Image 1 (cartoon, rainbow, N blue to C red):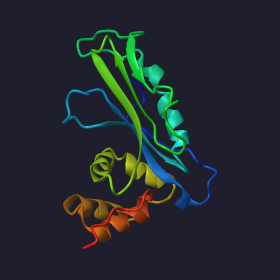
Image 2: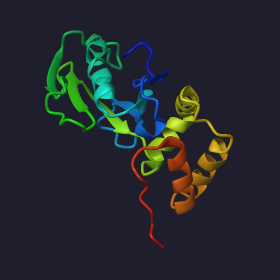
Image 3: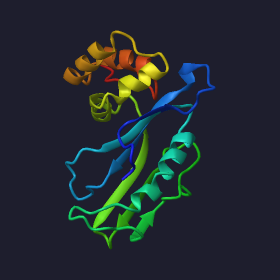
Image 4: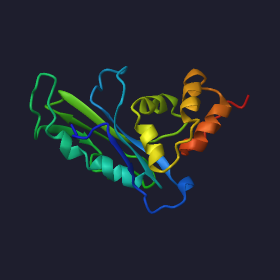
Length: 182
């Protein structure tokens, strides 16, 4: 597993002076493919003008999984036996990356993906918020308003509140929020 997993916060577009052109992206990882209730894990959160730089970052992580150990300590180094899009060749320009590989003759299945963080992904937003990565990312580009914690807490209680979605969108950017139109 990557050594700095869950602690990476970085601006991959440091020369972009217009923060409205940047979005937040997360690199997610799942090694519990058979457990549909398992929470995703996060490698890190990134500011970027588009997904390409974050995609490259995710693809570069695959060699670190080659030494992955199974639950019983099995060493799967060099035993990647099935893979899909680990080089990113099937990822269309402007789209987020998703790849998959099996290790140890199917003993462990790992998926690695890039997601653009948005108000529309309430569950992901809450999980990333719980890791404090989101607050670190906002602070990185001086977008950490005093109201952030309050808005996040209110969104947890009222995930369908359009006014709260708009307010959070103003803070984190990303795709326009899906509104209920009521």
